[in-house]
Length: 170
Image (tube, rainbow, N blue to C red; front, side, top):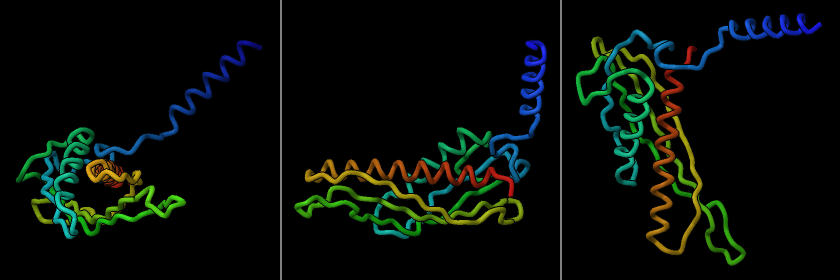
């Protein structure tokens, strides 16, 4: 009986291992042969909040250089990932009994375009958004630090979301 259980377990392991499931990645996705180098210029910032485009550019460069196997360079790549920061908002979402703000949500909405530089062909175009909550603080410096940390998190999540979106087979 033990021999049959062992054989059954081995058979299940082989069946599950051969199912073809794999995580989405740039090297196996729809743009795997599109190029070896990518240019990620700073996105256009159409909001009132300064430096969102710089924080987003750093997050995108970190994400694509670290995971994709592409060489990210400042210009003349095979591909260009460009876009715009379309909106940024800060909304109070929680109040105390004394009617003071306890928590905020920071939201960012971007559009992006992946283009092959040799013929200017658009390979992908879309928009993404992300929101992050953070606690309110009566100290202005601590409040600004919390908002800056939320912006860093939003940009990191948007970069991850964009990478995952581009790595998926449709």
